[in-house]
Length: 247
Image (cartoon, rainbow, N blue to C red; front, side, top):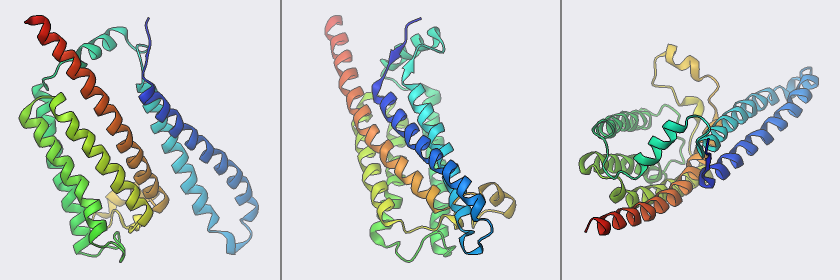
């Protein structure tokens, strides 16, 4: 069995996992301390901090672990890995994947409409500091993502769209870190427009969770810049050599 290591995924995954592990260690300490602070009413707020840390640590370790594992190919199925490597060099997008791009556009439209209605109806999710710059940074990547999906679905080629995907990663990274810095949100009101029985599973969502999501989006954008640029260069060279061989 041959295992291929992709450090472009292994290293970011391990970094995210270790950050989550550090948060989990902090949670253990605070969980012990909070037990003794239970009898001090003024310090009851620490329980919410402890809960946020637990959710954040578990989420980070899960995401980091999955990213790291995806960078080690060959350990789960040699046949599947071989098929994946062959598929990577095929430039044409499969019909089912092209349909999936259009489905993704529809889902993005629904998400866009949901947040727009949250803003118009003043549900409390967007704070008073959600100005024009923040609106552009929030809605812009969603619209750009729909444009990229439409191009992939209509054009049907992978490599030609990768420079646009790399640009999309840069936009996501810049806007995510900007919104993380400004953070004009109150994530406790994220599900305000949903029916009450749909809101119950999201009781744990709070501002620290939202900040974590923007941080991961920013890191993911940076990784996307590099991976799509490298894949574009490698596949372009491979395709060019194939054409020259045929001629």
